Structures are given as C-alpha cells and as structure tokens.
Length: 629
Ligand code: OXD
Ligand code: MN
Image (cartoon, rainbow, N blue to C red; front, side, top):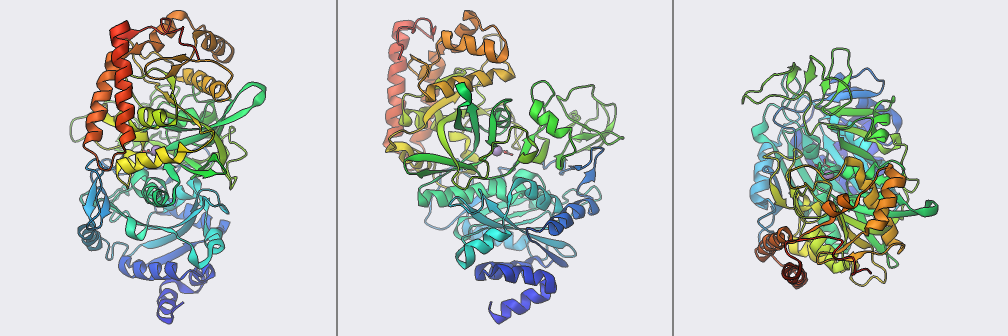
C-alpha cells in the first residue's frame, strides 16, 4: 500500500489490527479506511476477522458498553432503541441523486452534493472517545457468483453483534476476491448516547445511500432496520448493481415446500414487513432457506436464488407456542440471540405481546421501567413490548433449516409468490396466467396496508410493487422491466402466484386462520408440478374445492366446507376494478414505465368488466367451475 496509507493505518490501528487489514491486501479498502478513520476520529479501532476470538470480543463489548443486557436463558440478551427510533425512518432515508439522474417521486431522494455536504457535517469526530469496530461480511453464500463482500464501520457493538448472527463471515471472502473485489461500504454511528444508552440526537438521524460509491452513511439512529448496513441498506446498493448486470434483489423469503413423496419445490415469496413473510418461511414441516432478502440469477435457463443472509431479524409480536413451534423452540433453547424492545421482567424473563401467559405486572422495556397503563409523553398507552420488537438469531437455531442454505449455486425456484395486507380485494391464493401477468398484476400492482415496521401511521393502503418499494434505488418502471425481462425468454419460467392472509368477510372478520397459509403453499406446490387443475377466473387461476378439501383435512385436520370456499374464493369484481384504476393512475405518473404494464392492466380491466356484466359484482367460484384447465 502507498507509504502514506500504511503509516496512517499503522498509527491508528496498532500493529495487530494493521496486520489484519494488510492481510486482505485491497488498496481501495485501505484508502476507504484511511479516509473514514480520519473523519470519524475514534479513540480506538478494532478490526474483526473471521476468528472466533475476534467475534467474542464484539459480543462482550456489547454487554460491557450496556448496549445489551443478559437474560435468564444463557446466550440471550436484550437491546433497546430510543423510544422514538423503533422502526425504519423513511423520512430521513434518502438515495443521493447525482445531477442529471432521475428517480420517481415515490422514492425519497436528495441531491447528491447536498446530501454529502449534510452528512460530512455530521460525521467529523462523531466517534471521538469511542471505539470503531470494523467488520467484514459476505452477502449471499461465500465462494459463489452471488457473493458480495461488505465492510461495516460502526461504533455500536450491538450492530456489529447483530450482523454476526445475520450474515456470513467475510474476511476470507475479501481475501478470495483479491484486490479487484467490488465491495459495499457501510458507515454507522449512533452518535451521543444518554444514560439509558439511547440516541441523544435524533434530529440528526440520517440514512443516506450513495450509489456512486457503493457507500451508505447512517448516523444518530439505533433501530436495526436503519443501522444494520447489510440488511435494508445493502438492498439499495444491490438493486442498483443487479439492474446493471441482469439479476434481481428481492424482498423475498426462500423456502422449500414438500410435495408428495417428500418432493421439495422451492419458492420465493415477497411480502411487505410485518405481513407474514417470516411466519411463512417458518411453516412447520417445510424448509427455510431465508426469510427476508434474496438474490435471483438465471443460470442455464433456471432461476436460482440464495438467501442474502444467514439469520433472522424477526418480529417477535404474536409469536406463541401453538402457531410458531419452530421459533418458540429456538427462543426457549440456549441459543445466542438478541431481543430488541421487548419487556424484561425483574427475574430477566422475556415477554412480548401475543406470547403465551399473562402480561407481567412490571418490568423494563423500550420506555424504561414499565407497568400496565403507563403512558408516554403524548398520552398514548405504552404496550409491554413494541409492535416492531424483534429477535435476532442465526438460522442454524431453526430445526427446519434447508441443507442447501449455503449452496454457492443457490436453489432452483419453481414458484414466486406475492402477498400484501389486503382487507377486501385479493382472494387467499391465485395463480397468474403467465410470467408477464404475474409480474405486473400480482407483483407490480401489489398494495398493502402500512405497519409498525416503518415510522408513521399504520393501516393505510399503499402501493408497494413487489413489496420492494422502500428499497428501490432505480425508477419503478425500470425495476418492473428488469423483472419482466428476467423471466421473458425462459423455457420454463417459475409460476407466479398471489396470496392474501388478511382478507376480511363482510363483518370485518379474518376469513383465514394463521396456519391456513400452509394449504395455499401445498396447492401451489402441486400446481408447479402440474398435479392439479385450476379454475380460470378474470383475475387468475384458483384452486378447485375438491383439491383444497382433502389438503385441509390431511394437513390441518380441518373440515373445509363449501361455504368456507365460497366466502374465500368469491371474486370481488368491483374491488378488483377499483384497484386497477388506482394502480393505472399511479403508473401513469411514474418514469420509464414499460408499455406491458398498461397492456396487462387494461386486459385485466376488460376481463373484469365483461365478468361484471355477465355475473355481477361478486362471482362465486362454483359458477366458474366449468372453466377448468
Ligand atoms: C425488515 C423490514 O426488518 O422489512 O425485514 O422492515
Ligand atoms: Mn424485510
């Protein structure tokens, strides 16, 4: 390395840490480190390799610094974020846009120069008196054409520890990729902390994504969705890179569904946050590969997918022994895991909303000491745990982990599923007519009600194409085109489906129980393998009653009546037409929208209008029984 870099790094890092960086031998990494160590100006620097002693140092530091506290079950800790920093902060998260480039208004952007000026006012000396932790990870399996190395700079041992549970080790991967490695860079500082170890300067909370430099800056925030660089921040960088190279980064689970004779068919599934993605990936008896982010590539006419991560940053609310046996078991065994923003009782037991058992009468949570009826400064009652409280755990703690999870070639995808939180329009499961219908009508036209995973009001219906809108770093139209092109010329593209776990009846009651989703996946598995027929409707292909009934009986031991089927699978024509109008209007105002989007939307409208004339506003699935294919 140039003499000046070497000198500067040696001085700042000390002999041992310097050797670790020298071992990687990547000049752009050295340059990056020299620049930012100077700006952040920490008192100390620790370089973490893949060695267990280094990783242990980070775990212990999180406890020493009070960012985590130990719980009664060995290996478990709890962490708290600032009371007002409990979700992804969309308002202060921006893609930095170079002059002359355009992005849609639905994506928050900031002129690049303005953003960099702003962040470079906040960063100088932000780590004064603190220890900077430098960690190396790999997005996707190591030793694979999916692998993307990444370096994280942070002053939070909680962030560095979480990443250890969530991502594959990357120090060796940096070495393997050599000096040409195109790595992602993440710089995080939680800034000043108060006595409760929560961020003092939320007004300087920033998350800026610089696509030009593959770098993300993030300051004065603690919530994992804002700070764990490799999670939602890396997605923006990867979407941009994949768009240039012809592969996809999706907000998707990856899982294997078992069919007859133990056949395993892999699916990906896109759902907005807090809409059942993790609980789907955790279905008992099926195999999990990943629960949140997938890279998809075409290899020899097949769609192959990998889990970008190796752990779960899961939502804890609602997890109970009956509905979530796999997670329950992992949470009650001595596994290394970090809870965040839950209630901890005086005897160090973890409690969250929806857990089995009584609500404790006191404890400690994200608001400090907690008791039932406690209100916050706005007069709002504080629940025992935050609805977006989380648990961070390695997938290895899950007994349903798929053996192919680290396969450098990924798994072959047979089906792609899109789902949102939709009270009144989409039926529980439906297959698209073909790739383009699926990508546009099931994926690009997805709507979902907002949840506690982002700051702001929950329950508002929002456009969320492929459940990926929050993470897009390219125009929506271009993103949709990339998806269309991805499957266009494949001889056997994966089948595309929609699911809706949140459909209500006319009295506002959920039409499905939490575990009914298992049946939808079993049916999709049979469809992918061409073992059952379907009924053609104006919106897609739906299951036959005769196929669902035995699945409900044999898998859930439930009697699925004709009345259940009728209620769930009645096509709601008017609601679907209104949705087409809403979505068409949105796309008319977006950039670079491919004409296929309007063709598919128009064709769906025409089918629905003629069905409306013929059958009225609600079409019973029994009426359409003759359209069997
Ligand atoms: C997540 C999210 O944490 O999407 O996965 O918010
Ligand atoms: Mn997510």
